[in-house]
Length: 355
Image 1: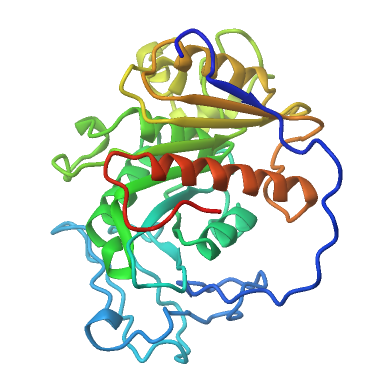
Image 2: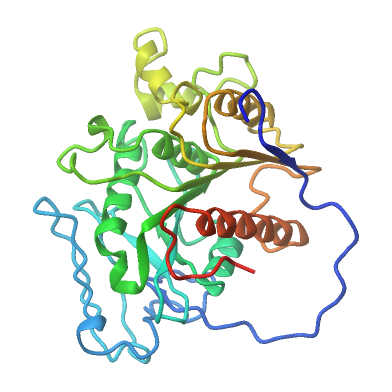
């Protein structure tokens, strides 16, 4: 609906859910895990899809003639210990990703691509949005957590180019792991929310696809959480962040006003935007919720797709990082939303909507 978001949702209210009997945590196959954060499989162990043998166990991970990355994932994989094997989506050391797979490989699954935050200069794909990623994989989504180049070594739009390259890799390769390349949703928190929104609003823009201009980088849904949507901060919502100028953009708004404007999702809204579900905490003092409110108002005023907004009472920045009662509500809401969008997509895969 033009002029306002289609729906404002409040997550986290209501009575505490009834206690449930304890159930063992389900096994979620993970490719590319080398961290020590307690993910099933442990440190330095790469998990592959159960029963992967023969041709399906071979990972031909490539992004085209300019990429030298590859993954030597060879079965029988479910019991094989490997260290350092991570699919590469591009030529840079940061161009690696983790795949979190549903156990059912008999149907084609929608894809969720997760972009970590960290102010464009730090952050780890292994540590963010774990509740969401594990839940979505359990419920039949192929989840892809990506790394990307960080500032100060990287200068914007390097970060966005990497996200686009990862989307291109997913579209080319995810079928090997049972993913449906025709349905890709993107999500991320903070700086990751900024990059997710910007990627969703700039499909197939050759400026952000050097060397892979012909690849389709459109996405079918976007879920940015507590994102930065206006780098210029036109309405003086945030405290000044000098590091964006000195470390990320490496130019000032005075020197390059157009560049700063084009780097702001609020300036890139258009009628053909995909469905958006924007989330923010009411007590976020790092990125105040007004940042998302004004973005939602601008997007819903022009977009022909649904635009939803949820403001979580009492939530601060990074409310989805750790497992909590609130993050359970968030995960449930996002899962229901993405399941509905996938179910109503023009050419949905065989996978049923999340229940």
